[in-house]
Structure formats: C-alpha cells, structure tokens
Amino acid sequence: MELTAQALFTGLLMGGFYGLIAVGLALVFGTMKVINLAHGELVLLAAYIAYALESQTGLNPMLSLPIAMAVVIVAALVTFYLTNQIKKDRELNSLILTFGLGIVLTNGLLMVFSADIYSTQSSWFMEGVVIADSLFSMRSEMIAFIVGIAALGGLYWWLNHTWHGRAIRSVSSNRDAAKLMGMNPTKAELWSWGVAGVLAALAGVMLYVTSVIHPPVGHSLTIKAFVITVLAGMGSIPGVLVGAIMIGVIEGLTTTYFQSSLAELASMTVFLLVLLVMPSGLFGKKGAH
Amino acid sequence: MLKVEDLSVSFGGVRALQNVNFEVHKHEVLGLVGPNGAGKTTSFNVLSGVVKPVSGTVTYDGHDILKSSMHQRVTYGIGRTFQIPQPMHELTVRENLIVAQRFGRPDGKVKQDRIDEILESVNLSHKSESDAATELALTERKALEVAKALATEPTLLMLDEVLAGLETTSKKLFMETLKKIRKQYNLSMIVIEHDIETIMNMCDRVVVFNFGQVIAEGDPEETFRNPEVVRSYTGEVLA
Image 1 (cartoon, rainbow over the protein chains, first blue to last red):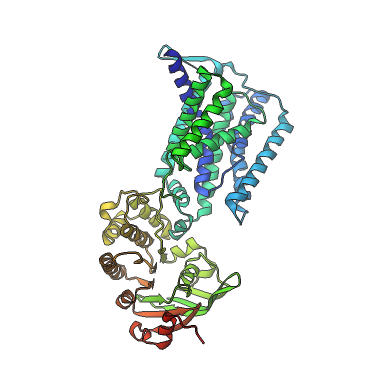
Image 2 (image 1 turned 90 degrees about the vertical axis):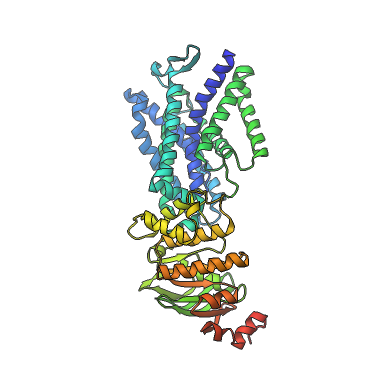
C-alpha cells in the first residue's frame, strides 16, 4: 500500500514536470498548427545555460532563469520566423524544418559542451523531503512540480483573461474568422512562440536541477511533449496537465512494480489505447479544427 | 461608398471574375445573384481579402482596400459572414463578440451594452454563455455569425448565403431579423442569396453574375424579367 502511494506520488510529481515540458509545444500547435520538433532542444538549451552559469560563475541555477529565458525566447522567435517563411503546406514542411533545427541545436550543444553528462553541483536540490510522514521526494522534484502547476495555471489564466490570450485562442480556433474580426494572426502567433519560449526555459532549468543533461535528451523531451500534447487533445491546456499526470503515474507505477526500462513502453501503450477510444484525445473537441 | 472597378480574378487558368464593375451606395442593400460558380463568393472573397485579384481596384470610403490586409479592412467598417458559420470554437458566444469588438474596432474599446444589444437583436441573449462550438443549433450559429460581424461595428455588412439551409419558418424569421438590424445600425449590405423571394424582399438593387461577368443590374423585379438573366438561370450558355 505504502509502495503504491509512493509510486502514485512520484508519478504525480513527474506529471507536473512533464506538463511544463509539453505545454509550450501544445500552445504553438494550438495557435499555428505547427508541431515544433525542436521544442525539446529549446528546453535543453535552457538547461545548458543553467549549467554553464553554475559551472562558470557558481550562480544558483534558479537565478539563471532570466538569462535562459532571454536566450530561449530569441531561439523560439527565430524558429517562428523561419517557420513563417514557409508559404506552402506549412503544417507538413514545418515538421522537416523544426526537426532540422533540433538537429542543429543538438549538435551545437555537443560541440560546445561535449557529450558529457552534467547535473547540478548544488546538493540542496537533491535533499529529501518527506510529506505526510511517508511520501518521499527530492526537493528539486517538488520545486519542478510546483513550478509546472503554477506555469500551467498561469498560462490557463493568461489565455482566458487577457487580450493576447483571447487573440491566441481565436486564431487557434479559426484563423480566417479571426482576421474577419480584425485580428492580426501573425501577432498572436508571435506571442504564442514567445510564451512557449518562456515555458521551455522554465522547463529547462527545472530539468537541470532534477535530472541529468546530455545532448540527446532534447530529442526524447520532444517525443514526450508530443505524446502528451496528442493525448491531451491538441491545444488543450487542462488536457496537457491531465495527460502529463497520467503518463507520470503510469511510469511511476511501472518503475515501482516492474522495471524502469518498461516505463516508456507502458505509457506509450496506454497512450495508444486512449487514442483508440478517444481519437481527439482526452480534451479534444469534436467540432474544433 | 464601395466601388469595384474592372476586377478580374484567376485560379490557375480559370477566369473566376472578368472585368467586374459594381457599386454599393450608402444604406443600400445590394443583392449578388447568379447560378453556382458565377463569381459571387469570389467577389466577396476579394472584398474581404481572402483572395487577391489579378487586376482591378476596389475603394471603400476613400480607402484603396486591395492594399490593406484582411484585418485592416475590418477596421475600415467592412464586416463579412461566411456561408458555413465559423464560430470561434474555443470561446463562448459572448466572448466571440467581445473579441470582435476589441480587435475589429479602430479604438479597440469593448462596450458591454452594445454586445448585449447585438445579442438581443439576433435572439442570442439566452445563449450568451454557451459554448459556440457544441451548444448552438444551425440557426443560432448563423445568428452568431451575423452578431460577430456586427460587433466589429461595420458600415457595410456582407452576408454570404446566410439563410441557406434554414427551413421556411426560420428563414422568414431570420430575414426579418436582418431587416431590423439593417435599420437599427444604418447598414449598407451586400447579400448573396439563391432564394429569389428573399432577394425581392430584402434588396434595393441586384447585380447578376454569370461565368464571372456581370450580365445585368438594377431593380430586382425588372432585372429578373430580363431574358438574359432568365437564360443564365435556365442554363443556356451566353453567345
């Protein structure tokens, strides 16, 4: 019983963090119908900035966030600019473009930082936290979970209560109709890529303090983010949270009761089963485009 | 008010519009009629910015609108509905109108009383908090389509077969709503419609299209007696 509770708790924490990783990809897909296959690499870029600043200046990784955000926002906006240059079959051709950009970023990181594995040098993040006398986690996992939930909640609020957010939802819903309501879709898309950059930077710094980083990680982060986005129902923020927690809990239970190498197989199996029953994903609207 | 001069549109090798000319005067309701594929919706698509013409000019209240983007034209006062309603799936009915007011008006101000008034005009007050994608019937989705355009506070409203697909009673009620709206907001309108009775009932003047050309224009009753117009509807190819 205790073991199950611990597995569920760990899965929940992982889910919050996975949600943070996926939500930037979901936001851009929702607005522009572009699947950014370089999203994981943008997350990883932020993680390496945190590493570089910590190793060179001793800066606490959390304090590297503003610099990481600035760099990743610029990288996200460059990706947006390039994607926006595609005039024909943008949804399909952008897959090739962003996949290529991901490879460029991965190799850039490989050249600058080598293939070595890095993690934070601060032991503070690795210290244990005990909740309700029996549930254990690392301090960094708790922080990543809280940051993830706060970021998703903040994004949900922003999309629903600000004009930029409403514009993004409108463009996401129907681009031509949005233009006929006086909106400039390019502006809305620019905002969504910028915000996706902020979220990727947050996820990257959290990645660095909770886990280990090395160049190939970016690609697996993209796959994870993509799976969660599809599971959620393309573009749904509450769906991202539920989908991410679902994946996290399945991985937690599989690791506890079977073995960690089967965790991704189990989550992918459940992912496919859900899509079989609900082809639009958990929160996908039938009438939506 | 709106002046279309020598407008031509091509899709590949197909000429969809050939040297089309027409005008819409202030507070006038102009009907665009003609068989399917005659060029009516293409004209709408050019006026609203969905399609770029090969040649020609379109001026609206002194603006050369062909040089403006789709969203800029809305702020000049041109509103449009689509044949198939295009609600913002992610927003409620009221939010659809709020967004249209915020972005479609040059000053960007949202006037809640105006939104309430529009919702009442199109009989959607009781659905204001409903999900636009899943909770509206066809007539209500069509009403929302008109309401969205009205929320941008247009001076010219272009209605693309807004009554299509409605059964007789709903069609009559909807037509009365449109006539009421026209008076209430002092609108000029361009209406694409296949139903002759609707055109006779609503329009001050008609322009008849066939094979991408204007073949007649004038008073609806007289125009529909024109033998060339009758031939275009019975399928006879122009000599």
